[in-house]
Length: 287
Image 1 (cartoon, rainbow, N blue to C red):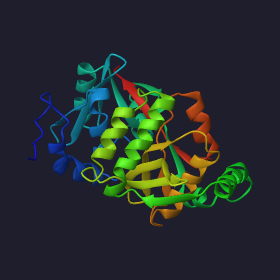
Image 2: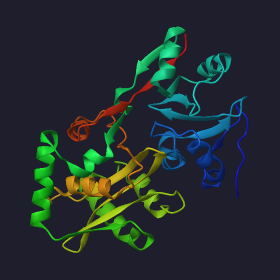
Image 3: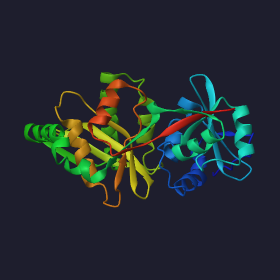
Image 4: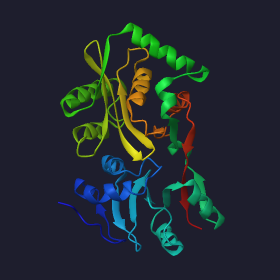
């Protein structure tokens, strides 16, 4: 049953019943920020304690907690100045504020802080699908090594392959620890169709060893939410990235690979794929 959003300050938890309203509402915004899809909000609802409601202008407000502090996000952009100032009295800070809105708020004297750990990495889909030129020489060598060393096969991540993808996730969690978005990744696989997610699964020597999963973020951009691969296969993840980028429809000019969360290893990995841009995000506090 479809749920209705209450008016702020009332709020409700994020449930699958909200999807018939929230998914088209967020999609219509053609967001650049990766957090602003229903799948992302739903999957990380427990990690952030997300709740949703409507502002006086009927736009969506999403609230949550981070590091013991309360925050809110406005996917539609800045509400009226009085409303925004009132929200900053109710919450510790605003999160996922766009660069444009951050500049506006800074000019009005609000305390604006760059949230580098949550910048989204943006890549040109064609560049990832080809790995051409000196910039990608090392990546292409890894892909060539993998292709020459192993028997492999890639398949669309259809319903019949979800159990194999779950098996990849289980092996990945044994290698990396289940605390690293394991629960969200598993729920994404089990609700793949309901959340309109799509991806690919990759077999090495007839064994499922990697998968990738995402969705359309806006008409020009596909966002990767999850990418898991088993260690021990040199070049596997580079191959998966190149292969999947090549399979995406050409209408997607860009691939958003989300944030590095301040992890040095993840940052080095994402920077190694040569992003063409970042979607900058900011935190904003009151006067």
